[in-house]
Structures are given as C-alpha cells and as structure tokens.
Length: 77
Image (cartoon, rainbow, N blue to C red; front, side, top):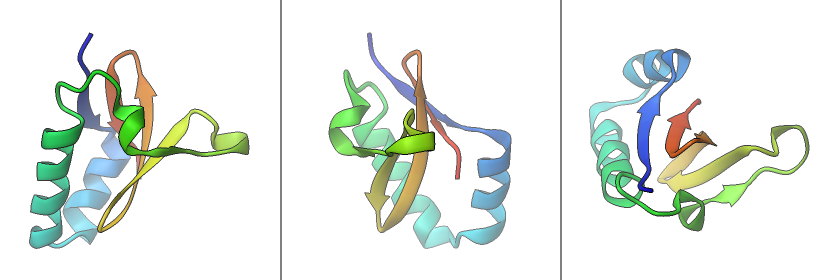
C-alpha cells in the first residue's frame, strides 16, 4: 500500500503563518517527491525515542515532525 501526507489543523496554521514562501515550496516539493506514493516513509526519517516514540522527523532544510498512521504521514509541527 502507498502512503500519502497531509497536515493536521495546528501544523497547517503554523505552516501558513510562520514559514516563508520559499520554504513552503521546498517542503511541499519534498513531501510530494519522497512521501507521496512511497511504500515506506520511514526510510527518509528518524524515529523519536521515549514519549514521542510513534513520531518521526525529517530534515528538509529544517526539521519536520510527523506521525505515521495507516498509510498517511500526518505532519504535526
């Protein structure tokens, strides 16, 4: 099964308000080329240890925090 990605509500609000347009473009392009349609998005990131054990982070200029759920990578800043 292939994965897709989406923002949670809080992450989308932060993305729109706190991140500039050039960074928007770089992040969206990276997510579309690496996560969208991927068989395993974990290969691109690193898992958190401890209380955030189900979360993964990705370096795309800065860090992206994500939760992988049932073939959807949920970006949650």
